[in-house]
Image (cartoon, rainbow, N blue to C red; front, side, top):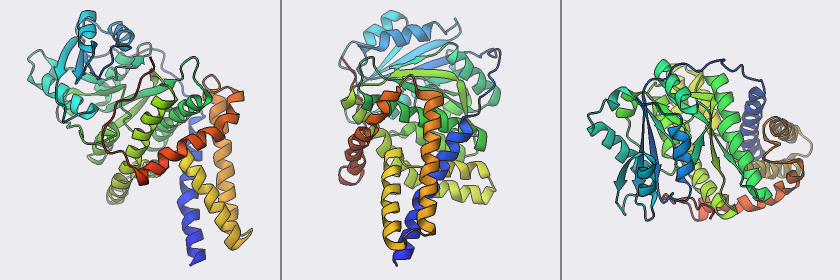
Length: 390
């Protein structure tokens, strides 16, 4: 019985560790960037916004710089209690307002926006639709880049959505931004190279018009975008990654970051249990290695949870089997993962996480533990807005 338990823990922890390490190493190879951006078709930027008056103006300004006369910005002011709608309207956006205290969250706002576009007679059905959060600034040419790819490939396109720590943020927020980069850039690049697929991550997403018209957002989900992307993959549609199209948000304070990470990680753990069996079954039926790789990626839990599980498995293996094969497998996978994460930090994250901040990683682990324990004791089931810094 103890041997069976040990090997269960070995497989349950070493496989996700090996997958994550492999993804980090695959993503280290540099990408050849295209010299020019293909001409973009007409597109609509759909921006859900809830009480974003303090920060929406610079985002709208950045979006308008990338719009042509044939393009449009539509802001969904969702259950706002501030001046979000007035500010967006004054800056030149088309604004629609939604009031529904019972049905809240980004999925509801996106459904409202989709229905609004469907009722219009302004040729929107010939435009690519881009979903962009109200606190996320598009990088140079990011919007036309993903619009062009969506049209050319007839696929859902996810840009590289990253977070920058505020100027005076503590090391915990910096480590959280590094974890966000691993999830949203490094692992996406690896999925693109290994599976020819990507996951949707909420902001900087582009959809061909016919695809967007037929989509229905999961209004009860904590990670409606992730679920939507997996549903598209299971339906045989393409979801691809645009590494060169950057979208950057500013991380919140430690308190705001905690709420955001809690929602994302509880949502991802729930999605893992629902979608991994379906992905593996579909991959087997269709003999599709790409879907199997997506399933393996979903099996990778939050890094802190994975590290805790590896440590527990190492202790158990040492007590039960001494320096036997289970312990060797666990130590090898742990060291490989540590090396891969260190190489990833050296390549991508020295600016957001200086060398001196690495000593704060144990503090980040202690900060994250209660958020993960709450998945069992007090699981988040309803959408809550991330608190912004004043």
